[in-house]
Length: 72
Image (cartoon, rainbow, N blue to C red; front, top):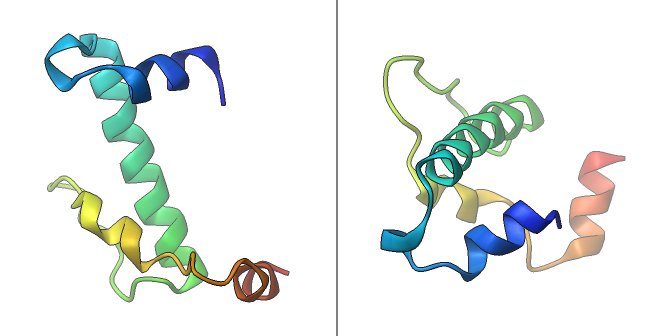
């Protein structure tokens, strides 16, 4: 994890820098497209709406071996 990512995770939302907030939003959008390409979500993310952070729960994280098999 980069220093900037650590700072973001350790900060309280009101203390986050605008750029940190913006970077997190763009990372979520990138993750949504990647999740669609891997088949974790069925619909391609809309370009005119922000992705819901709840979609990240659709990444199979309980069984890391299963995830590795999916990505192999």
